[in-house]
Amino acid sequence: GKFKNPVKLPSNINAPSCNTTQPHLAILPKGEVLFFVSDRTGGKGLKDIWLAKRNSDGTFANPVNLGVNINTFGNEITPFYYVRDSLLFFSSECHTNIGGYDIFQSKGDPLTNKWSKVKNLGAPINTSHNDLYYVFDADSVKAYFVSNREESMRFIDGAYGNDIYSYS
Image (cartoon, rainbow, N blue to C red; front, side, top):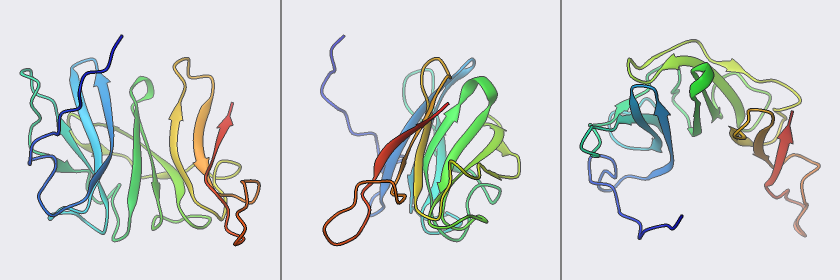
């Protein structure tokens, strides 16, 4: 019931001189996998989605890139793996989209790192603005995501803020 002090993961995850961000730990029937975003060497584009299997001693194996079915020459961000349906949800600015970052899904197995062709979730989830951080609630009844669509709060300078939306 209480959080402990955070512990920085080792350099095989937090590569020196690289940005490593947006972690998501997926608890699978046969182990745990850490998804994260990084601009580390060996990627396909600017920011890629990577995964690292958790070893039985609690350490993480060396990360692997999710490959060209997921990662493009641009940015792929905000990974969320839905274990029940073996679906990876993420946002991309370079897969065919409506505009800005769109949310995509791909069916796959993190233990084999095999992923289907990505599918754009389309409207009303995606808009011509940025749509990010897609997740399900614990009961899989609602999905939540972040967007700066026109219904979002508008700042004095005319830009739209990121608001949280839900979808049944």
